[in-house]
Length: 265
Image (cartoon, rainbow, N blue to C red; front, side, top):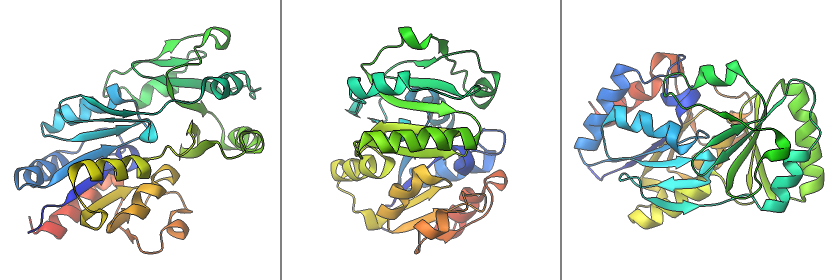
């Protein structure tokens, strides 16, 4: 069988409802890598956060982090980094925000947030990745891979509208969940990062399987030969992905179930 590249989002896709790897998922991915297939994890999470899951899998895997802002090889070497323009970063940091909306920056090696947020920590409990509280007036404007706003969907919609009206398309704006509005440099997304990685690895997009659940996965899923989206996906996913296959729920290790079926394990 031709070696395939398997690329998967994490939260809402490969990880269970507890934001952890299911034992069956670990077993299936280890088996596929041992058979010569390639694995890429692609997430909105920070690289340091993602690395924990790769270490749990104990396989060679490339990591696309911060929605495509960074790509690392299996030996932790940085292959690519794309930062938000400092002037645009300064404007986003200073942007008025409704009460209760948290501002975060994903730097090369750190996570800054404007105030304490227990809900943000809960999602990362399995990895121990924690933020540093930095007041907006002291936040840096250089070396930022991703800027994100966390809060109620209606409040985020107002912020999204302001950003789209003022950025003139020079930023990539997306969501990883309905409560997480995420901004990268223009042209930065998981699909662009995966395309660059495939060229490095001399693998064609049609030889790839991809899995995702939210709007920040659309470009990645649109690129590959075998795209899949989850039962628990954002309701607009099907409209964006006419050729993709819907599979089961992330809470039931549906990616592992599909991969067992696809590769006859």
